[in-house]
Image 1 (cartoon, rainbow, N blue to C red):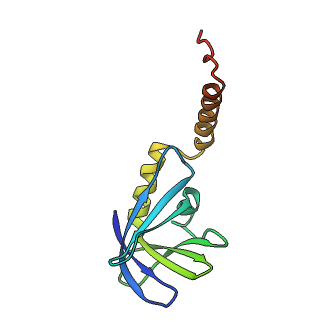
Image 2 (image 1 turned 180 degrees about the horizontal axis):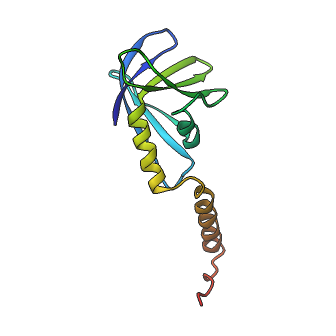
Image 3 (image 1 turned 60 degrees about the horizontal axis):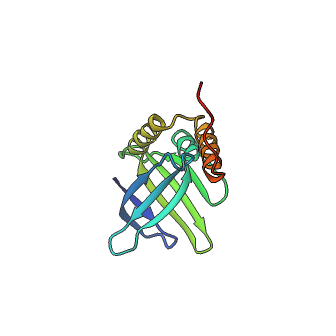
Length: 138
């Protein structure tokens, strides 16, 4: 967990707690849980590739964009803009915290291996669903 800021549609800026969740069960995405005092937590599911690209430049189109931001006399941050029909939220997270977290996720599931993992899971599910015996190992 790390601390950050969230800026809401009305322009109010509040401190928040940010928790990132990664699972091999869904290796292409990261869960971003934002908790503000006195409010329910909100969770967004964001592409791991999008977050990684946003560490070094603006990435994303549409409802979610990610970009590094530098403010004078402050540590480097990453800005996530999340838009929906009710407006836009801007979430500021420490660049170093996000970088370390993504490195951790890459150690669990290296880039490029996600599809292979999902393919193996799908093949295993198909075998189990069909009630077939697994292929013999020679």
